[in-house]
Length: 316
Image 1 (cartoon, rainbow, N blue to C red):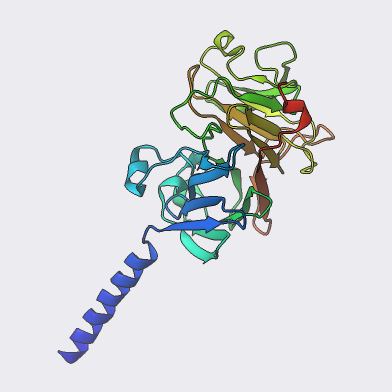
Image 2: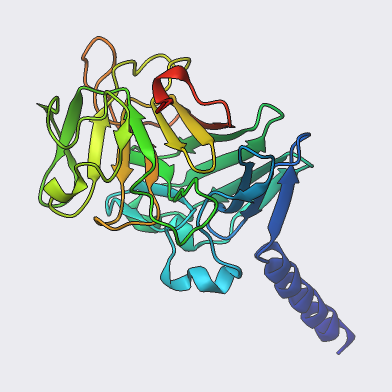
């Protein structure tokens, strides 16, 4: 009887520990200038981010929900989006990730898939680290390994509005993209690798312009994949977003060759800027999306905030 009680106690303890390890948590990180971000281990997502406006007031610049349960019907918002396996579906935004480490300015999260998850004949090990630097930049760093070959896509589900009011339209905000070409989608919303020239079309942001200036000439707003001009050089900005009313500018730097822009319709209050490991390198060689055992996928994105916009974004 005593032996049975010992077994039951051990089993109950195991259940409690397992439940604790899957507990949903939020982490507040703050840089030396007072900017702050909140990260949730549910979907390894960015829940909130503040940045200063021209007169020194901190305001929100990304969309998010107050409680993790609110993401049940909005799983991609702010989340780490990973497409993998034979099913090539995104599933990890609905998972609770392990917390590897956290401090005042950084959070590292990890998720290891089970054998066969999402049709993968092995396991995928995904680590994402959010760091809020004293340069007023949010750094997002991805490292992924696998025990079986898989196609892989990883990006973010962050939706920005630099005005400080998440209900205000973004159509007056200015956008610049370092791209002359776009990568066409097929009917399944997959990139085909077919590049199209965009100069002098509604999709041309090689010169800064208001997002709403030509959006009515599109079918349903912007939902385009841009082949960047400097895909191998993370020192070159991929895109710049500027809100003249608040004075905020956000410069995006990426290790990836493609930047997907989505305004979620013609009358939007948010925009996503999502780097993808797809398209072509600077030598116009097609990028492989395959990940083999023994390889490490490493991707990085930097969102840099300032109230001193680059010269090319100054409207007056």
